[in-house]
Length: 176
Image (spheres, rainbow, N blue to C red):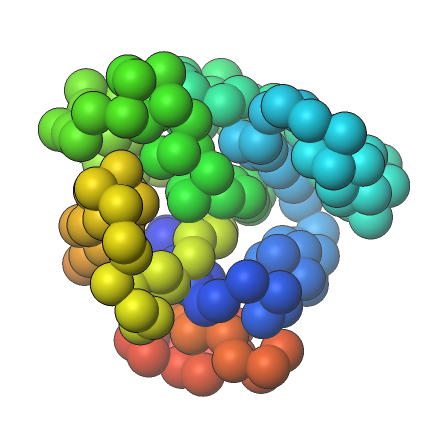
């Protein structure tokens, strides 16, 4: 059975809350990998809010680009790790590349590392492919890249949940 769970859904659908609840059921060490960068005041406030919500229950790693490296740095005492979120991480990669589409070596390295986990991993992402077709090429590239990344992760995950209105809809695997 895969040690990977994927939580996807739209904005403000309860993805992060669900991930923290699942991880909170573990009694061992917990790590939280945050991918957001404080580019503006709104993001700074949001990041601070998330830090307060997590409190002391998680060892926090803030890593916007090298997700595989962040996973490798997690100590052996960790029982579960949460990555929040793949959407922001991919946006960071595209931003740093000047808006170019992948493939990104960081994505390949991350996907390869998913087979070497010694802890349970809960990944949060967004489902951005269910809306209208974006009007600009950069937004279309981002939607397409994230769709491919989500497919790759879902294929490796033992559990996939789609959050709708705060409710987890089981897509793959067992309740947890």
